[in-house]
Length: 151
Image 1 (cartoon, rainbow, N blue to C red):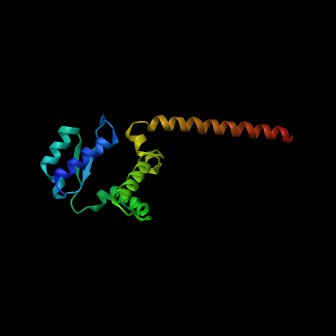
Image 2 (image 1 turned 90 degrees about the vertical axis):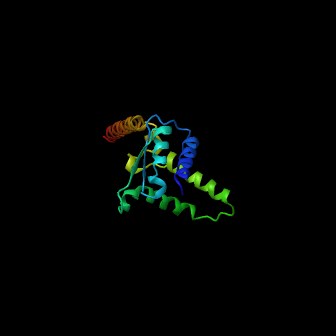
């Protein structure tokens, strides 16, 4: 893989998500030759204002989250047989969409990565808190009503 391959992959990812980079993310990568090329760093900063961070050499734990992501994807994708590349691509696309838009992540306070990235996390947590309070208040009043009826 070359730095040009990585740049094209990032271009496709940004285009496919349709997300404008108002809050540009950082790209964490290992120290492979395609990631340490200065042309990649220039492309990321000029084109997308993305900061590129390299993991500590000989420290695989740095990449732990993405490695776990890949393992989770493989555990699901490998359950089926795919008879042509387009079937596999469709399955991977579906899994990525589920993982980013529908699956709640404990590490993200039970929000989806999409919610967090788009800055909707606090709004969602406030709505959940209101629902929780309403449920508690409803239970309290129901318990009081039942207590009065039993007397």
